[in-house]
Length: 93
Image (cartoon, rainbow, N blue to C red; front, side, top):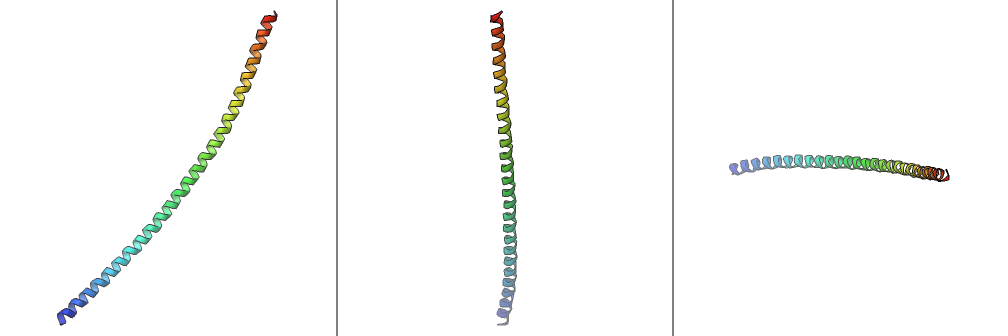
């Protein structure tokens, strides 16, 4: 009977130890999940910022291209007028 009592006490100690270990693992798992969520949020914020920067760059680039197109168009018109003036001057001589 004393042997059974000793075994039961030993088992109770082991169960208590296992409960503590499970509790520690659960706490560590909760911390890991929390850290993972925080890292994911940081990553999402960074991606959002990068996308906004790319959108701003594209908008600036589009406006610069539009300015260049206007400049090229104006230069083409001036060139055509110049060539026409030269042709008219040559024909009138």
